[in-house]
Image (cartoon, rainbow, N blue to C red; front, side, top):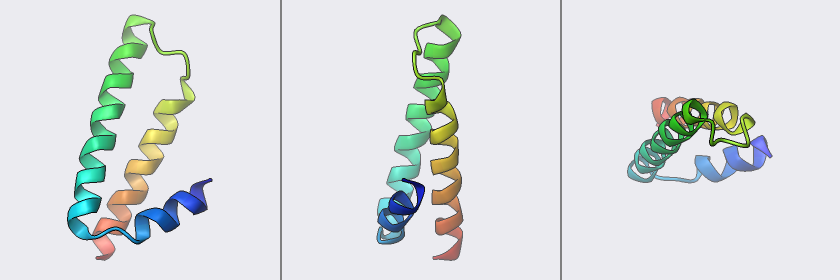
Length: 63
């Protein structure tokens, strides 16, 4: 899954990538709040979102 997601991200422009980073960071924040209140069922989602953000920031630096 990670390689497929990476290939999708690689084809995005700088503006699209920045937009995607902001959206993912927002999702991460929302999920952290859900975890704090005990509403989050999929705790692995936090890990996946952090990894996606790292991938996007890496690509952002190389463009």
